[in-house]
Image 1: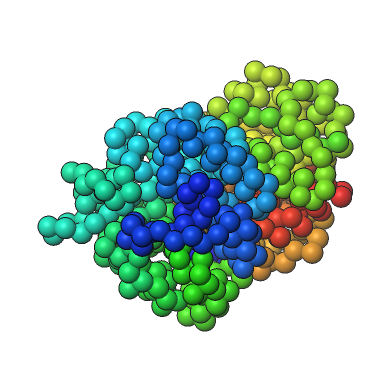
Image 2: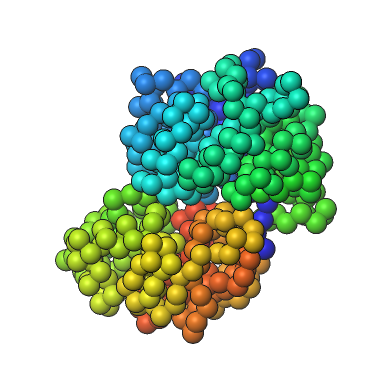
Length: 251
Length: 192
């Protein structure tokens, strides 16, 4: 049976792991490679590395970090942050990234989705959506949650599927950093509107929140950062809890 | 010497890294002489079947690979290309295995992406591995079950998780990305 995936996210700034609370306050949670190795040992199913300060000048630093991660890690990992072109993707894939994640660049230039899918395959492409509930609907935001767009989240997810995206990483800005649970509503709507895998993100604060999102939506993965970084919920404890609640996870 | 067949796209680096972690050196190449001389050949692959076959044909690797006498391990698309035919891009493949490659019916999320266990395993490739062990899959197309099937798995329907015939071995999943279970399977192949 296909298992639900538990995915720690490591936000990277200048080669170090950080985590923003509501995308603002940033705390240092250590060395990304050491942290990644700890997660693999504990049973993480995949890892996501998001370079939150990725700029053209920093690109080389990220590629170097990805090369080191790929040498150490024997589970799939995704790299995102500031990816704007097929060339950016090529550099990261060559360094050993299994998947890349794009967000703002896909909104600005949806053809980039098709271009990446064509060259590297859909399985290589995660499209991240930051979404916020306002004025009775879920809206797509870009640039780390700073810019509101005119796109509605469900319609954008369907467009991503049509263009060849392989997976959706859906972050609810209303929930992110609150530890009050995933936004079930939007996760349900998006995961039922498309047939791509959806990873729920934003708001995980307890084992129960993962149970809820897996029971009430079609999401196949749950992503979180700080609760894993600061060991508030050890991954083995989470998996044990889910398993006891009849949610199939990898032991 | 371990040879990893070079492709124009896809993450072959992760295969080389996984082998290095097991203490083996390898080269990534499409040089026919090196492929023939290798102790082991690993034929990985992600991407699209017709594009990959086109790449192999340009280098006449479509003629060479099926004739190799050394142990060959196809991974993911590499396994599908060793089959007879793939629905992906209506592609005639290498024909080492007589299996057909079909698209998963759209009754659930396609691709299958994530960790899945086996419903049966045999073959020296799976020494020390049990049915309950999980490995990492990413695929929209699957190989049918035939006498070559040495591991079965289930997603929407039963499919071939691994194939074996003579010196040819193949896995639909990614052993290089399947944590310690994957390491064991790669090690089993390298020690054949």
